[in-house]
Length: 134
Image (cartoon, rainbow, N blue to C red; front, side):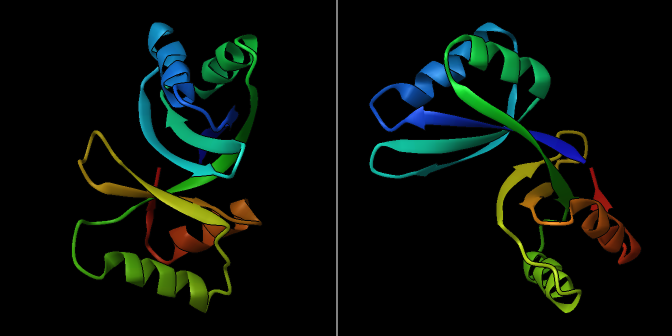
């Protein structure tokens, strides 16, 4: 199970750089991220080296943040592997709220970061199907 930090940020020039600068200044490495925007605000979701510390320093800087559990499913970098994962989840009646890509620095393999309801049950289901979770 991975911890993800979500940051609610103003959709304006330099916001993302300010956030990444705060993390860099505190020695926190960003391992994966996705940004979703709207007209005025966006949500930046990140997998980082120290999520609790990232949460603390970003909140101290005035950002609204949230920590949440997400799954990290390692997949081989081969044609069709993402489709097989999604098919496996569909066959198990699992809905995905959102997902994005990161990678395992030790193995070099892609990691799909997945947020879903019933995350603990989904984790056990995927393990039972032979998927490697980090």
